[in-house]
Image 1 (cartoon, helix red, strand yellow):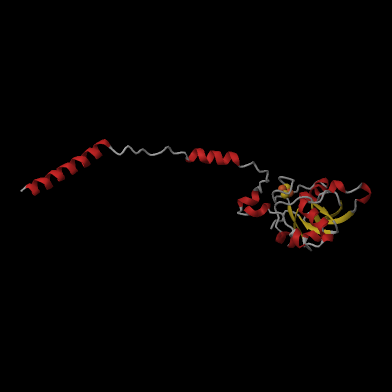
Image 2 (tube, protein in one colour):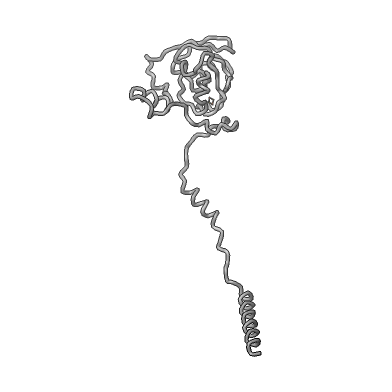
Length: 196
Ligand code: FES
């Protein structure tokens, strides 16, 4: 009888403690959400980049279009380094001295004429000087609006780009060039308004 009273007393005591615990709550509170603050701090710590937008090339999914064409410098022999650097940085037409300017015969197939273009004059400007309405947008080698096709490609056998942020090496192998930044190094036939 005494044992039964003890067990009952213990059970009542335990229930009372549990009831009191839940009545008071645990005192735990969710911590403040700081995720937005952390994101803002991280964004502020990343420096601005000045990568040019690849413009309309990226709309078609060519997000990697800004990768400049050209080989890896590490694989080149010493004598080829200067050439590779020029390719990577683009060639500077203003660096051609007046007495070193050369002229090439460029046949504009669609316009039905062959004109002389100087080695320091972009194909687009040479065509515009003839009064032809040729396509363009950025005039800086960053879109592909002005692209043209060199029938006898690869393009690099006939022109050099002062800047190219839109065409892949394969495109140039197939004869495509950006007429706004393409300067002749030989005679050739060009089809304007042709893009890869
Ligand atoms: S006009 Fe944009 S690349 Fe020539």
